[in-house]
Length: 455
Image (cartoon, rainbow, N blue to C red; front, side, top):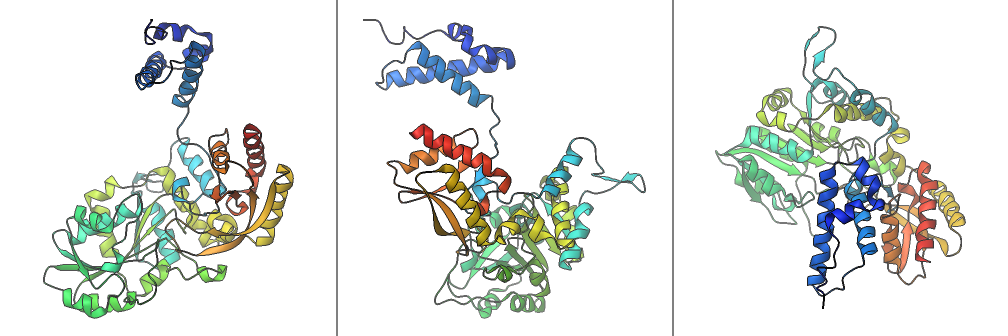
């Protein structure tokens, strides 16, 4: 009996197949050869595991799909129909048209990234966003780096290496992707001193923990969870007074980068950067791609002498922003300067979207999709480690009564235009709040294709 392994085609035979001609002509030969070998290795492994040897045509078809995947950019545009506005897995905050235009303008050629055009001398990229941040928040100085974790690591390294930093046990948060505040502190060389309990921490707990080794208090906003019930925490202003009375720094990490009063949108209260500074924090930290609505960035603002020291620290260079991010951040901040953020910044535009408008679009979707599509009430989440458990009323397109809703959701995700929806029990739900109106036609086409494929 002939071994199934001996019936497998050679790499040369596969590569000579006309169905691979487009790949042979368009891509580096060694890439095509490597993928072909990987395909055959996968088949051999499957046979060794007891599976039946595939036919030659099946191997070629599988190889074509793998070559398409191997030669397609991994990062793709996705339609977010989940209703989670700041969706970390989907790239957090989408950028405004102006921010995208600003990135394009500086990325296609040269820019004044580190040159003073008036004087013709070398400048520093940090100044390009600093004045905007300071005007909006009232801070003396500011610095933008790659992300908020980098900003916090930089500050702890600069001001608390080999010293103690006191933090409430209730604020030892994990900030996403497995990164935890204690681990960041350890990497900085600072020594973590926990005080209080998970649910209750008092000012006297901080005071009792102060020693000659203490450099700072760290206050971290619990932006991605909420402790309710028998709780007690110390307001930022009280911490600031104690810190300054004892010659210590107060480092405050509200995290979300919020500049607006969230209660005006029917949401709970989220601390703003301005309020943190006004309460007496020496340095304040935030992300750029959460409620600020800009690109990924970590923003540090506060006292000038402290920020100036951070700018000169070696870690500042390792975490600095590139020209595209600086352009997008500047354009986003300008929306706030012009008081047009609710119309121009996608995060706030989605938050402010009237339910009547969402309902009209959901009904249009349902009409286009046809039989089996309905409209139900739902809630949109802010997400992204901001306003935990806060949601907004919305209307959802609902597709139910199917044998395998999870399979439909997968077909939507892997289609030519990936659509990410949410599944609740036996129903697929799509929220217009997080879908830009310009994407409606693509979403409807993707839905129809996925439904037809599942036919």
